[in-house]
Image 1: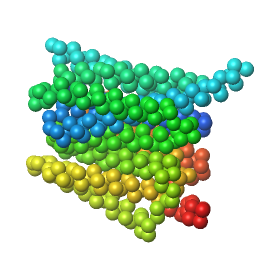
Image 2: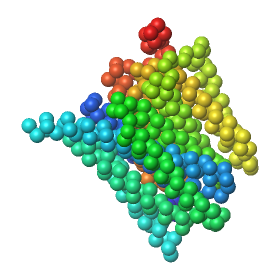
Image 3: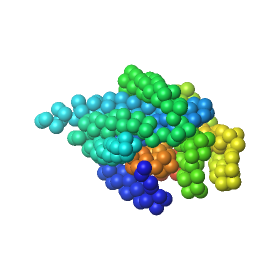
Image 4: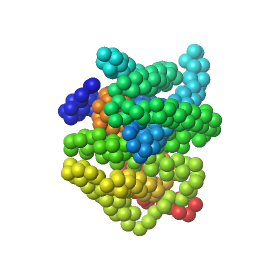
Length: 101
Length: 293
């Protein structure tokens, strides 16, 4: 089992925070909305946290709330993908002819 | 033996998944590579979800008899939650995209809050640091969940007028302090034994009420910035719950979105010539046009 203590956790958070900051640092304004949607999809990874707690549930309360966690997390991931894909596909058709010329 | 193999496999796939999610997001940040970015990130997500089911070999002995039921429930939740959202995201008109982002983001916040709730009810988390992290993630997730739903309702024109009560700022401050106090109570009581479930329910209700009241006064035109803030909030909550579950993929993906979302919020606010504080707390910003409109 991986064990992450508090300080290792803080280091991971710091480095990941920097990565996020740099990735978004210089994007053109037209990409703001697709990127918001794209990052919305990325935190849909929360669904695997939901699966982990649901598989470990022992009482009815834990099972119900764990079920809700997976339900909502799956909604976040699937919906985020569908919406981002549509936004970026629209972007592709308008960007491609300009690019080809 | 099978325990170690599956843990190794889960660890390796989660690492690859975290890389693909970041690389996908990086591709989305450039106009030329953007359309393929979501596909890269999508592959990362799909393999991460699949491999998570290998955790069944690692569940506690107490949960073992319930495994068939729990696995069934997880699959049902995946199919229903994923299916409905997928269908909704495909069907909706292009003009309704912002509120779809809001509602899916709210779901993520709700999922993070639910994970925290299970951890609190199951009392898996011991020690003051993990407990505080759980509660902090729960608070942020619940605020993001409730706030995103209000943002969705405003964009969907279900809530048309911004609600502005006198002393709203002080009411909100009071609600915030009250939910913080409930969180501290849970942390303190957990140290000395059992926490009444009522405390946990109360904590979540207060946090969601705060999220609702924080979002209600903000006008519809400012909603994209508000959704972007809640997007960063959900990322942060996911990252914090990732630490509680000791899952680095969740920590990394969550915190990257937390920071990226904050950066995006600043850029969007700047494009509107506003500051974030101005959007969140100035009830007067666009009040005249709305009040008389």
